[in-house]
Amino acid sequence: MSIETIITMLAGGMVTSLQIFCFTLVGALPLGLLVSLGRGSSFTPLRWFVRFYISVMRGTPLILQLFIVYFGPYYIFGLQMGQDFRFTATLIAFILNYAAYFGEIFRSGIESIPHGQYEAAAVLGYSRTQTFVRIILPQVFKRIIPPLTNEIITLVKDTALAFTLGVAEMFTQAKAIVSSQGSLLAFLIAGIFYYVFNALVAFIMERVEKAFAYYHE
Amino acid sequence: MSDARANILRISKARKSFGSDEVLHSISLSVDTGEVVAIIGPSGSGKSTLLRCATLLEQLDGGSLYYDGEAIASGEDDGPAVYASAQVLQSARMKFGLVFQDFNLFPHYTVMKNITDPPLHVQKRNREDVFAEAQTLLEKMGLEDKGTSLPCELSGGQQQRVSIARALALNPKILYFDEPTSALDPELTAEILRVIRALAAEHMTMVIVTHEMSFAREVADRILFMDSGVIVEEGPAEQLVDHPRHERLRAFLNKLET
Image (cartoon, rainbow over all chains, first blue to last red; front, side):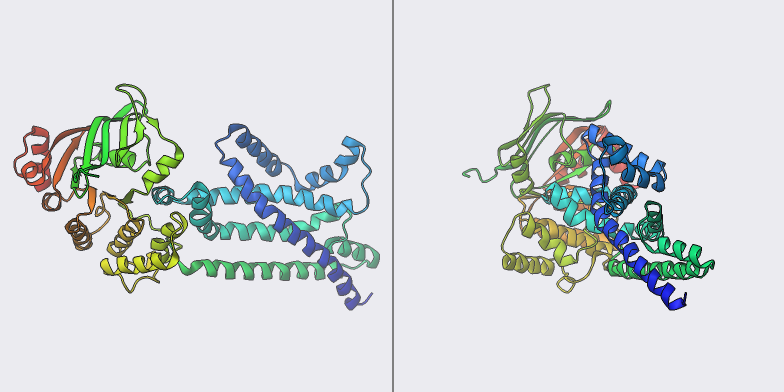
């Protein structure tokens, strides 16, 4: 098999990896914000439920969560899921898992905003929602960019775990090529793909960080 | 209103505790329109707590609070203070402004946006009017060229002037200052005192918690001396500073001089 063929096959897998990555971000970032709000809610049952959810997501392996989401419908409810469910299950597990981590990052950001900001907003008559959306959240984003970057880079690498459910993402492809060719070349190229992907993520996040650097406290 | 010296603020028998520690013991205080009142006293005397209760940042445990004669909180003699509806509280918030010790400007907004955002988004006022008024306020504060600056690009004195402009932009009937110069060095302090003096000359109603005794004596109509959660002495500014009647006030003033 030529290098060109390997690259083409891996690039095909890369598209799936990218999809997992993008869908997870789009789902887990807003859900993470909700998680952080639930975690800080004054409604005790909700707060405890969210705490429990976070502790399970952080306390068990993502690979185990993938299996439970994928096999759960059959073993628990006797439901036969189609082939497409592999991809859907991957997304569900990734979004639920990453929302927990993003939620904690949001929470740390929200808690780091000085209390005086809330007091100034209250005295000026801003509603609770206005205070959060106009005053607090923009400042939270600036503060959480570094930990968020870390987590997003981890997500890029974690997409490889989808191979356990047989989703044809890049690592699954690389593994197949390696076992059929008896050469590690595909792994090497896949590694380069991941590395470049993450270099791009780091570059973009640096730009985002710069965009927020127009002020400091 | 026929009574020219109507109470804009009236607090009666206010009580406030933090845990078992009662920091306000039955405080009563009225402020007339156009009056400048200074509150002095040692740290922990309850003066900031009084201001925080008046600005609804803290809730009273007991007693009553009125703005423009309207009950915001009302309590029977020893009973708990009962607060009015959220709507009434919100309309009360539009009657006062508060200038904080450490400014609390919104760091991600320009000076202009700090001043115009509340009138635009809280009071939902007309954009052109709000910007025109904000420009006038900036000129009044000597910051006409700072509209596009960010708070982090300004000195402490300039930031505090922006926060005064931000409070004034909502056209409050009474303006509170919580130790407005405590975070500033003497030179910047003078800057802020000049601004407050100018507001007093325009008959802005103000309540100022301060440690600047000579300033309080000069600019205030009336001074309240608080200690351990009670108003120990109150009276015309010069009389209170020059001829203190209570031993505690005398001791406090002596300590400041040395």
